[in-house]
Image (cartoon, rainbow, N blue to C red; front, top):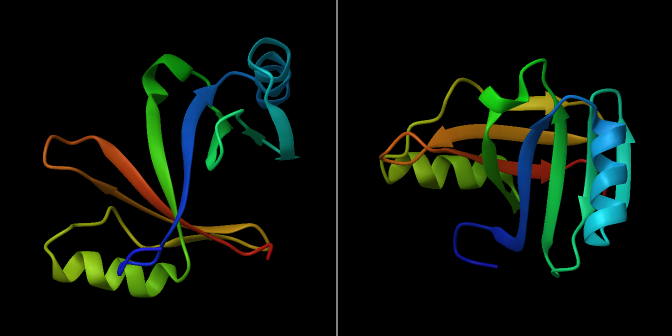
Length: 121
């Protein structure tokens, strides 16, 4: 863990047409293991320790792109620390009750990045 509270895990978020179909493809083709699935979202553990892939449903996945999601211990504290360093976030921190808190921001070239804090532990 760093001074910003990063936990050492990264989720690569991908836009897909069907989360269940995509999770099955990742399992069959890349030896991933499904961690969980909800309506419109699935997450798989890759064979690489600390790296998961989040599969979020989107009507036009080609426009959804990819987004690295960094898991943190305390999203409020990490967001505050990043904001003090000049990082601008996109809107408020979002909460998916009982699942996760998310905060989206961009690098200097506009690439999307996200922080997450699990609410399942």
